[in-house]
Image (cartoon, rainbow, N blue to C red; front, side, top):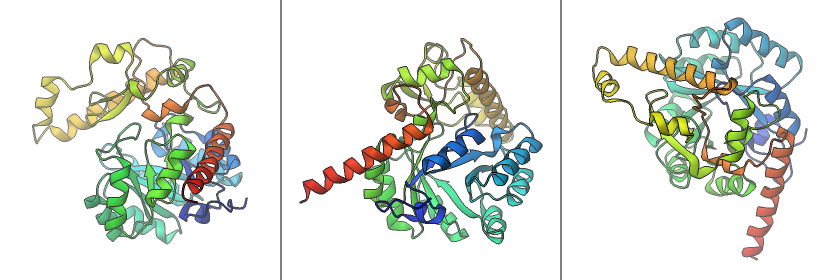
Length: 332
């Protein structure tokens, strides 16, 4: 597949994409079917390694994608919240993965060993301090996780964060968060990014494995219904403000906050909170339950009906080209 003559960026050139878009790694949601659909639509998808219960399942999935010649990336959490990351990393190194996106932790080992296998390494960042650190370690690009992201988000809006990163770093910047339309992609390109990582608008896609209830929530709720909760993992995470979320609240209890202040217990409490929160999300994602804690970002605003990934990408691409023409006319 030839890259579009309209869009030539680091992403389109490196991965031979039609559009500078990455189907973002979504916890519990992203699967091989979505990676295949993303490839056919002219973009590239990224799988969270933690979406697989066992190392064998991860290995089997990557082997199948490799045999079918489907390009993909893997999101790897490299801190203590993922005690299996080193074994997951071994499997990834033996695959034909095109890039690894690291989240949390120190990516130095991942960068060194991945480069030896000709695998690119991108790193999630929320500020210039960490961005400069991963650039010094040899990261190939940075994901600007901004305040519009779904799931775990940053504190700074993309319109400010991206120029900050561009000023301080020389490696490519990819926008992560708050994009669900063609004009949104164009705005990120105008800021100087090499493309956008888009997740929430694909939650209700036909290839998505989540429950009908979860999909309907993504279609019927919008940007104004997204709230930030610390009850899920201990750190800010965006969820849909369902009646259940309103009932349980979005802040940790005084007792949980007290435990987090204990230096000896903090590490274990964080791991326990994360595990408990992920189990709650998993139950809500695939089962009809009153405990509806559904993770999503404000860009579900652009989801109106269940559609295939190809149709969603084509719509975003058409909007992108239209936005280009409209912008050009304003300066002609």
